[in-house]
Amino acid sequence: MRNLSFTRWHYWALCTLLIVLGVQGFENGNVNNFRDQSIQLPVIYSYNNPALFQGDFLLDARESYVTWFYPALGVASRAIPLAWLMVGLYVLSVALTVSAVYTLAETLFPRHGVGPFAVILWMAYLPNPGGDFTHSPFVTHTTFAIAIELWALVLIWQHKYFGAAVLLGLAANINAMTSFFVGFMWLCAMIGNRRLWSWHTAAAFVV
Image (cartoon, rainbow, N blue to C red; front, side, top):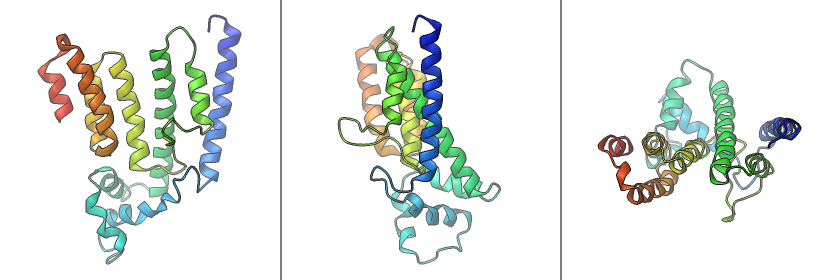
């Protein structure tokens, strides 16, 4: 990344791939085993208007989702069309995830210019070693939480534990299950750096 042409090449490559990612995200309704995530719409609409979908079996599972993501969307959709909210959150979650993937790669492997390549691999829909995918063509509470958790992971590696705790607290209120794993990494990092212990860092994580 020392010469300008190399940097410019990466910039245009990432811009092109980001556009491609956005287009295929809107075009494909069934990709990477995420299936049709429109199943969450009745749950969201039920928070907008409790009279809707009464007796629907999908609403029976609503209480099992320990998240404020759907209730917040339902309430917000009373003032803003839900379609606009979903598109906005999709773009935001993709932007957060792409920037976090880039920053995490650059943090783990400094001075090697691997950030753009990490983003390209993510955009190419390549799975991680576990075979899972961290993106979806339809924003969900899981994909939105993962975007935040990736940034928390970045802050952990940068030894900014207070900021990581705040992000993990936010993510845990969106999807507690996926937050557990990054939270465990945060805890291990704190144990390994006792000189950084402080009550306000622990309080941020607990809250």
